[in-house]
Length: 117
Image 1: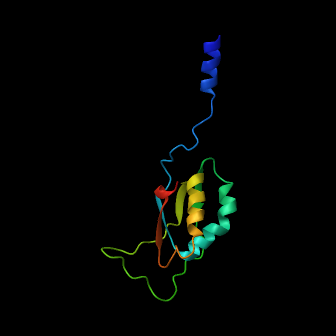
Image 2: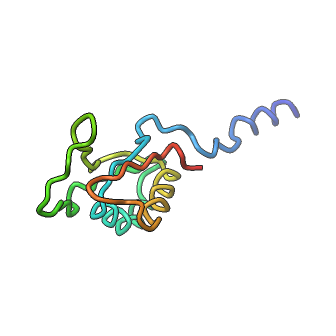
Image 3: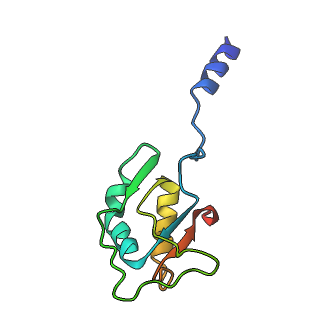
């Protein structure tokens, strides 16, 4: 009887704290206006989703000003990500990174989410 009870407890035990998210972004390319838009929407985003959060910044202001961005060395300029998926820990990490003074610069800053602890 004790073995059956123990087996039942293991079967309904707590789920792992952070399951890997196969659809989630490993990095996000973002510019200052999009970063501010994401920070403004953080409270809503943080309460949405079921472990995976769909971020859509396509309706945010993305003006670049008058001067076009210079091409990146060795290729095309990096474009900001307007739609991406994040886990809740990644969203929290991205928020804290975006709040670091001077981190996000024009034209685009790439933030690696794999460095989040």
